Amino acid sequence: MSSISTSAHEFFTIHTVPNLKAWLNDPTDIRLAMNAAVSLYHMADHFWHAYAVVDPSRVFGTTNTSSFRSELAHRNNHFAVLRDVVEAHKHMQLDRTSRVLTQSNQTTLGTTGFGEADFGTGPFGGGPSVVVELDDGRKHHLSYLAKEVEQLWRSLLA
Image (cartoon, rainbow, N blue to C red):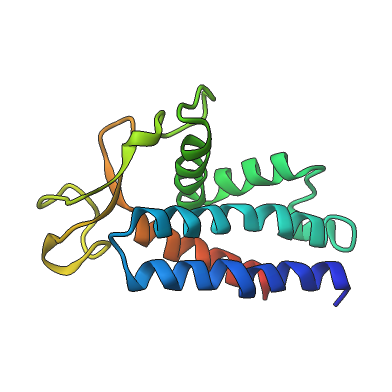
């Protein structure tokens, strides 16, 4: 393994996993939630730089980090939502046509009622969590999306 590809594994181990664990230990802390989401999202940059030259097939033959993130979003709906959450958090409002949400305030601490989010993806009994409401009105628990994206990175890093 080259030192560059090692850096992707190191970023995942040193930043991404601890940020996610810290948030999951305090799941209503929106600051910790966004730190975890940002780390999961920026894994794409670290991964692309690690593998673009040594094994372009691992980055789907993309030529830059932006096209790699777009391809990941195209291939993985969880990453697509997470990308929009993070980019809206940074820019306040998105105008990209391929977005699933528009504004940063669509990610908030809240609850979901019966049938408002996929069964089994949020806290048992419907307690508070960080909820993402898409432009079409569907709701997702950010913790579920984050866990799925963590698994995506584990599979890509294997």
